[in-house]
Length: 314
Length: 295
Image 1 (tube, rainbow over the protein chains, first blue to last red):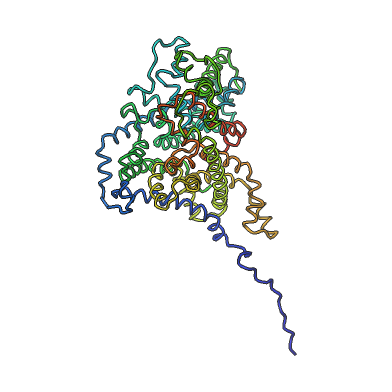
Image 2: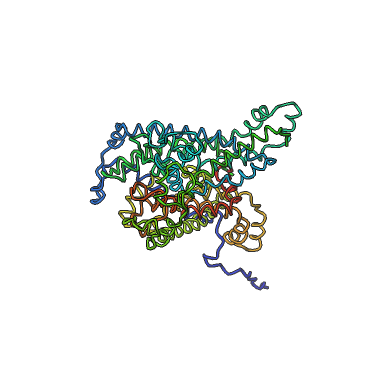
């Protein structure tokens, strides 16, 4: 006796484009655009910048397409250029002043707009993000109008309120110019810091304060022993992010001083820009100086990732 | 929460007024500067409020220099870039919208897999994004200029769009990934059991749930892209392809352009993003803190 053959009906095999992908290949396919973008616009140029920085590249070489290898020559010339060191020093001062003031101001203003019972605090909170909307180049031009020696709006206000008798040359004086350009930069980037601190303030449990008040702590003690420790992490984040970005300041310098007067406001990004894109267009030296800047910022970025973004696994 | 004495309240009001003054000072300056003539600005250098109010600065920009009004009646020279305001505005809008769409699309695909699929390489990708966010534009611009020049992509909007998308994508992923991580997986699993593919579950279940995060990320991308100067400045030198920030930057150092005209074009350029910030403040605040802290 033979048993009839049982045929199991199987679902027809789906064509490949309707088949379910494995988790691994799905993740890879989803990331193809990102990997392409990162590779083409970030990875490749950074590597190519390193390549350019060890070759002799000027306009003539760009036309012929032949770049001669010249070793550490570009780096040597950058490091021997006194202007580069001036630019680096100015960048350092600029960064310390802007980041330092931003952290102090951000904590103070975040505490201020956190006062729900004060109606002017609500007005401030409503306006606080406004500078974030201003294009950096417009911000620079507006401040160059504010700072103008002859026609400036700032001098007008000070004249009218009787605070000065003679006009002040805010951005034209080599001693004050660098500090003058920090103010517009702080103005534009402060909202970011305030918002982060304000968000962190919301996360501090209220009963901590109530408990402290029962224990007889005054406002300063509450700030010193509760608020400040709870803000420590966010302050570290702001410190690192703002330091890295202040290192590469460009627009405000272009609009207000163009590096002047003299070399008083030459900063690192401005140095690379001028060396590269104004005659005699030394692309090799420009890349070398930009690469030095990048290495310094990369060190900051690694610190950020190592200590702050530690919970990167999500 | 705590009782405040009248003195403290007064001090807080004073502090608030100081902050408000500082926030509004440049905005008042750009407004007052733009509504008066060069002559009025020079006539009395100690006056805050304008001697006379005129809209001629805006007229000359918005009519491409055709209607000069009283102020520019006698001027023989107007920078060509002032006349290309509409082209520049349109270019800026095209670039910013394209960059927003592309970064949102690519960014959400990546951020979702980073949040959901824990492989060693997705973790590495996230770390690469964190580091990439710090890369300064200037170091990219020199090689990008050389490359774009050699492939003939200088002076095109697509070159700028590609460069800005690549530059902003890591930031978009940093903003989006923490949000995707908070969406519960049960909904997707249910959809998958009902026969939805992984991609289908992403587009039909996750994307609709993530609308607030996409809005937050999108508005931030649009603003940064609208503001970006260095990328289009270096890649595009022809007036047809300039964006607004490039046109404005070209006025720097032009001795024939006085502050009033500059302030007028600045005011026109900053209005779109000011409107965005005023309307979508809540989303921007969420996006900014998500992109910096969570992880």
